Image (cartoon, rainbow over all chains, first blue to last red):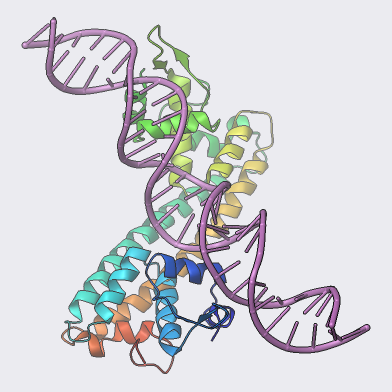
Length: 136
Length: 136
DNA sequence: CTTGACCCTATAGTTGCTACAGGGTGTAGA
DNA sequence: TCTACACCCTGTAGCAACTATAGGGTCAAG
């Protein structure tokens, strides 16, 4: 399989595949006589893994760690669970943040419909406590 | 107020304050005879605004836009509401994404507690459909 | 009078890609 | 056979939004 085929099979850009190789996430494949990269199913599997983990919000370092663990099938699953659990906690806190945010923004938008910026609650709310305008 | 004081008052790093000045988000303050930046309450207000907006998930361009609008108190509030409404929609979709993610991760973690990586659901789930190990 | 905490500028590094620039390869049509 | 075109190669520069480093200046306290 050539790089373009691998890329489209995993919804990845060609440049990203080469980038993953450069940073050591994807092993260098064999080359054809024309120096083209030639991939097999192992590469497809590994790249799919990487892309799925990335979509789940893991950073490249976490992906590297997951791959390292996944490559040693005798390790206890709990090590992988630990990484995933940390990620869940992160996600929970992000969700909480976003909900607070949403509530704040929603209240601001519904509180002013015809006013001018001078009395806009959005602006007031973003200014520091006790202040009423940015140029105070 | 010196830069360090301003920074700690707004939970910002000193370098970030200087960075905001460099990209034109924060107006250049007066300087002392020793060429130190000297900030007043207007700067504190503006930086608080920026940090709060950033924490609310606005990108620097959106912050710039909000500041521009906030600086002209006669504009209709609806222009700011529009920006906020778009942001609310973005937040809703981010929350939905994160919830999906959380559910997936949670199911994986609760499905395997004592197994080894070889049969770990996390690894299987990350691998492409139909495959059972990365080096297939 | 020197130590230490602060300040200054300018530049390079970070993460995770993405986009050139400047070339080579391989196949299909005129 | 020529040539147009899609694909491949390497290497480097750019994006957001900072963060860190190098190499210096300033100032109050001991």
